Image (cartoon, rainbow, N blue to C red):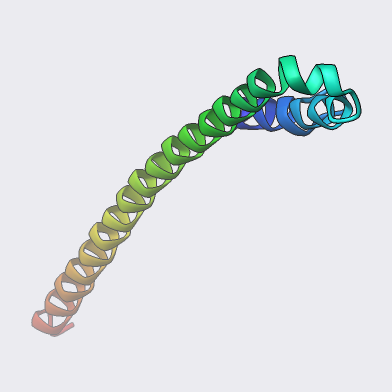
Length: 94
């Protein structure tokens, strides 16, 4: 999460890539010599953010599957305990 936040800050921060590109657009020489590199850096950082968020998404999906399997296991165990409890009390005529 921190890496995504840092990456986004690098893109959108006060001295970030977008800010630098906007400043660059005001200077024809800067555009001519530096805009391509600045746009490539922006693209590279955006791709890094996408990779990081995809990785986080995969981890959350794995965690969700684990939690769902755990929930299913707990429900099955509770059902077994209830059946055992009913059978135990119904066969004990006290």
